[in-house]
Length: 226
Image (cartoon, rainbow, N blue to C red):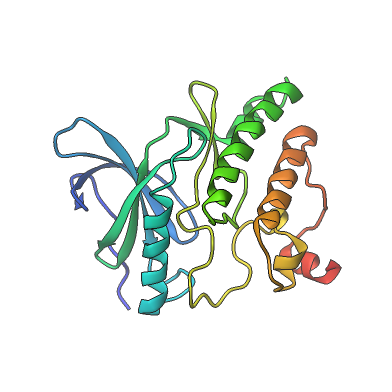
């Protein structure tokens, strides 16, 4: 099986022109792109269709339907999603480009000057954004230090709603941030918005104390404890 071609500067994806790569994850690449007019920039998250939850066409249709639903949610503490499409074996999601850094990087930069008021202030914003998603029936399911962004202006924005919740046909019951995954999800039981609240509180604990509320070296240890 041939490798998918990585997007390059100048490539046109869904009407946007790629400028540069912003980062990579386990199943995706994020690039900065601009509109042809040059008036606006977006972040494009390209998801490898071969390594995501499912290669079933119904599963991909479910994912794309979810992205369209997320695109209808607007909140100042949520990264705005514009839409999605497919390109050369990738599914891409176009979203608001946020100038800033992840919560993990922000905490490293503030490790010598911890400020619980500042940290909790950021989480109030994230909680409000998450509640707005929950009000629309959308769960995140993958809360971690990388999906909370601290902007250059000092605000917090939550990303990852576009692909957080497993689409129909997903084969994995647990995917992603196991340190913030609720017990019911680990056990494969029914879950709802309270699972996201569990994950958010675990993140807040880490931000305040510099360690996870449940010390475990691996996801297998978490399964054993459950």
